[in-house]
Length: 289
Image (cartoon, rainbow, N blue to C red; front, side):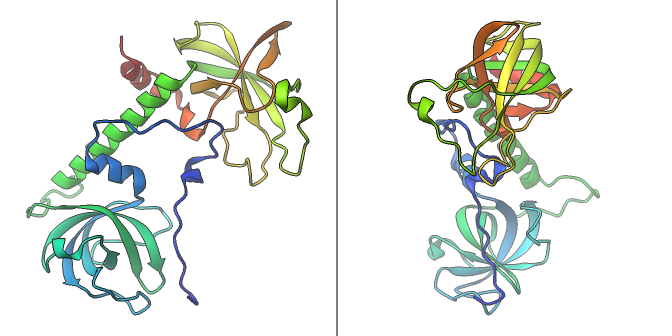
C-alpha cells in the first residue's frame, strides 16, 4: 500500500484486561451496540454512491463519498473536520441516495491522501437548520452525548455488579508482592514478560460494596512496563480514587499479608476500574438502594 496506513482499533486500547470483561447489556438500542464497536462517529451528506474520495481506495458498489457536516467522535490521531470528503464502505448501498444526510458509526479503514472508513451502522439524520449560537450543541450531538452516557453507565453498572469490592480510598503504601503461589500456579516460571507484581495498600474512606469505611485493602498490580503489561492499571503512593475490584485470581497468590494477618488480595481488571474520587456519587447512584 506504499504510504497508506491502516487504522486498527483494539480492545486493548483502554488497557490490558486482567479479568474477563462484562457481558453485553441487554435491552440496548442498535445505536448503543454500534457505539460499543466504533471509533469514529460523524454526520455527513452523501455526495455520490459507488464512488471514492481519493484514488488509493478501491472503488466498488459499496463505496460512498460523504461530505462531513459535523464530527461527533474520533481518535485524536485521525484528522477529520467539517467539509472533508470521506469514503465510507457501507453494508448495503441500496439504503443510500445522493444528497441524504446520515449519521455514520464507523471504524478506520485507510488513510493517506484522505480518509476511508468501514460502516458499523448508520442513522438517517433529520434535515435541521444549523445551530445559530456559537458553541451551542446540535440536537444530534446532544442525542449522541446522551447515548454515550447511557452506554457508559450501563457498562459501569455491569462492572459494579460483577465486582467483589468497590471502594473510595487512598494508597498509603506500595510494596513488592510476597509471592506465595498456590495450586497450579506453584510451578510458575518467570520470563521476560514477568509482571513484577506489586501491592498497593489502600485505606478505605468509603466502602460502596463489599468493604467497610476505615478498613485497609490490598490491590495487586503489575509493576512491569513490558509490552504485555504497560497498559495495565498502576498505583502510586498517595493516589486517591474510586476502585472497582475483583478478588485476585491472576497473580498466583490469592492472599496477602496485612497487619500480620492473611487477607484477600484484589485486582483492578482494567484502567476503566480505576476512577477519579469524584465518581463515587455516580457509582452509588448506579448501585442503587
